[in-house]
Length: 318
Image (cartoon, rainbow, N blue to C red; front, side, top):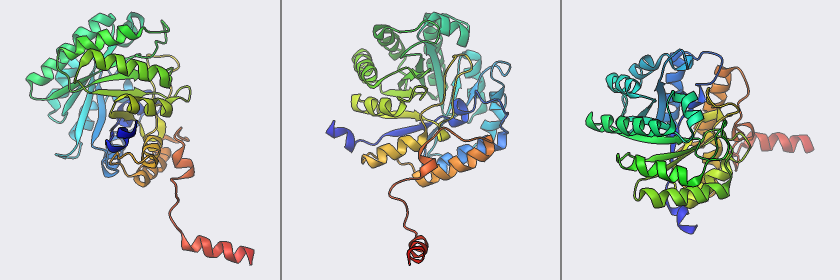
């Protein structure tokens, strides 16, 4: 475990897509772009900016093309577009602003039919085709296995099933394969076992992880994943998130909370915690509600010194 402290951890910010997609109030395109800009200012260099899906199914993502058109021009930032099928991939590539396609396959047939209208095996085939189409267009692509730790419809998912899907995906040479706890049922032991098994199945292909904090195990799962060899973590500012097609799915692990935990452990993320906390406060106003993230409520530690506060306290006790 000691060597994990010397390795930087990459944060993929997913609040503009996964964070917002299940919210009832429609967030304006300008606010979505501002959220992306604030994430960049906070040091995040990979951002899932939108998804190219049917707007009737996910109305929050209806402005995907407009969001892409307004993205800041940055050579040092990777903009990810989530896509479910070839039509979505073609739309994303046509914007000229998406650097990486994020394909999705699903671990069970029932969830795959609800999420994408196809079988689990069919979703793997489509994901592989999306990866290859991105590569043919001179872009990169990665794939996420949704419901890797459990399905809202079928319950437990065999670890060998996930390892087998990952092995199939690796044949298309994706930039990485993500294991997603879509409904937040994973635990640290399960995370360690599954990552170990998947690593054995995919060789040198990097592993990313995507945890929802539905049952309060999100941060523990992040820690276990890093210990097992995952160096890229999905997180959402404010802890927002959820899936329209997965009953019971709650927010993602909060970017502020993940960065605080890793910073305290001496693990580099490149993210500015103070800037993330300020963005949390801004996003709270945009959403019109308290956000699930915890660190923004109490602040980082140690707290910045404030000489005036010390003077005031002395006067109160005089």
